[in-house]
Image (cartoon, rainbow, N blue to C red):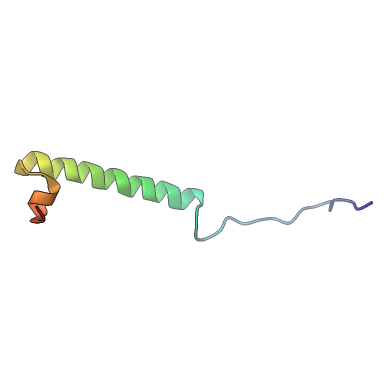
Length: 55
């Protein structure tokens, strides 16, 4: 019969990959991009692709 260790190892949060900080930063960047796209469409009267010359 094996026993669990009395004090488990302290796991630090990873510096890359899916962690809370990266997800929060990604969400904030997405919100800024979405609001910027809405502002471009509102002020120029064109869609984003037209404004970029892609359509």
